Image (cartoon, rainbow, N blue to C red; front, side):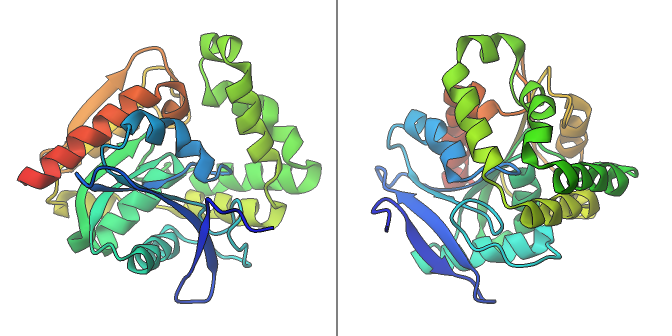
Amino acid sequence: MNDPLNSTATTRDGTKISYRLVKGSGQGRIALVHSLAMDKTFWEPTVAALDGFADALIYDCRGHGASDKPAGPYSVELFADDLADLMDHVGWSSAVVAGASMGGCVALAFAAGYPQRVEALGLFDTTACYGEDAPKAWAERADKALAEGMAALVGFQKTRWFSDSFREANPDIVEKAIAVFLKNELSAYAATCAMLGNADIRAALPKFSFPCRVAVGTEDYATPPEMARYMADNIPGASLFIMDGVRHFTPLEVPTTIAGHLKELAKAAKTA
């Protein structure tokens, strides 16, 4: 059954991408890229907090949600190409581009590969590189999922995603995220884990010439503040924001704060 809220675009290699374009007041265009093993619904609280300030494009990355799940290998550059094709499909020549966690890596790759299409860049709960041991660590996570199923990772994930107080106060949001996580196709999840293990966009950072905000929670131990500080230090003119008492899924834990950053980016893009 077709979902009237969602549409489908086809990328250059024939992959179908499920997306939703939320119309706003026309004060800007914002493309949002979700976290690993999530889908476009990850951004719904943030889009709601934007309150129609700008047009918002949310979508399921390949291998996720209702989008196609072709065999790997995947790369952040491939995911960036998908976003370029999706923007072509909806008629956007450029936009504020922002991502969280995996989505931030994709946003960085998009900024490196398509700098002329980036009006401003939002990097939330993310990193330009997970470190020297990343391929091994991400392979271990993928192997565990393949051997034991996604449910074997839930306990580990939900404590990384949300602060203790948030989990206690918002069990509905936590359970919704877990439900999305459990629906992931194992082979696509493993391919995306390998992608993140191999991702390294550090060399591109000094070349960026658009407004940029980097934000992370004090309690984020998936992509801790030192990773955010590295990006902010190496992107010319970037601003760094450390959010107290939150963990890795800030678009779900503090959507109004994230929406505020996006609004400021959209304003900065107009004056850049």
